[in-house]
Amino acid sequence: MEIELLREYLVIADEMNFTHAAKRLHTTQSTLSKHVAALEREFGEPMFRRARRGIELTEAGSVLYRRAAAIVDMMDGTRTEIAQLRRSMTVRVAGLLQNGDVMGLLSRVARTLRTDEQASLSLLPASVPSATSLVLGSEADVAICHKNFDGAEIEGLVCVELYREKLLAFVESTNELASCKELSIDDLRTASLARLSGSYADYGWTNIRRICAGHGFDPRGVPLPIDNMIDLMTYPLGDAVLLLQRGMMPVDTFTNEHRCCLPVKDDDAVFVVCAYCRADDEERLRPVLDVLRREAAHMGIEGDGPRDGSRGRFRSRCDALAREVDLNESEEAAMQGFARGRSIDRIAGDLGLSRIMVGDLLASVYKKAGVRDRQGLLDRIEAKELPW
Image (cartoon, rainbow, N blue to C red; front, side, top):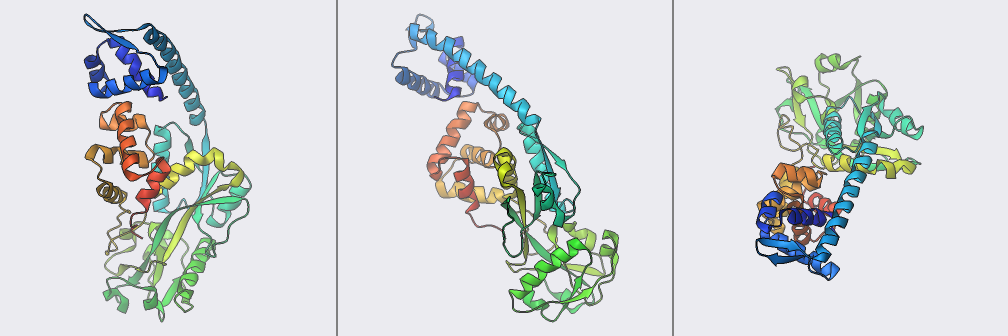
């Protein structure tokens, strides 16, 4: 039995009038009648009988009223206690914290977790190669890192793929490649690629070599002597091509009248961003990992121009599914909120509806989409064509 049916029943019993109860619950009389009929079928007894001025409780209805009030109170108290436990859980995150896209993702995740009273995030400074070591040593709970380029798993850790970060190419305006609208990896066969120094840069260079090897050549690297991000933004590139992940910094920061940015169009010219956690801690962190995965579903770079910087269009994928299964406007709005991990209470508040009505909308979405739960719904949405 749905707890919300009992909440609804209590309102009807308090009002002793279906019209007034429907107004309080922001639903219709016919919906209330159906739900009361469902309760009566379950218990095998009528709960209301007609009276001179409306309705009144039967003997069975009075019993249900007392028990329903106790059940609802107990459930509310349980939810409050669990919410307090969730608020007290702090998840320590390390990894790609210098990456603008990762920080944008974590800010949305933190907001969702805080709103739904699930947990809070604490960011730990750590270089990329050591972030997973911090998780293995229980010094961090989650590491946001690029996936191992050879695809090998890290023993003791669970890997959750989040999104794919495309490469951008920066060249001086005098470079012959500057006239191109976009580049492919094959265009770089004879080019000199700027090779940065440091452990993080070495990590990235390994991936660039892997990508080039997939196209049948080993890139020619030339050292780029920089010490900090300011140097990276201003140091002359000469004839070299600088490849960077899109999330390193806003594109406008790297471009000016002397330097331009070109998107790399190949599907394999990406860094795969993942979340790692200890296998024996996965269950505890499940709510956080689920929010990370849902929020990351609309990450990625699309568009032909390097200044587009638009995220993967999660809304467009929802629209596509809505058209495919013939959802109405209210059903699609409820689906989008639910797929993003919003609670039913929050969706109800956003749409100005009761929890019962939101539940009915989601039940209709499930039926039309042919799914049984939130994960199935998310899988249907993510199955639509992605922007990367």
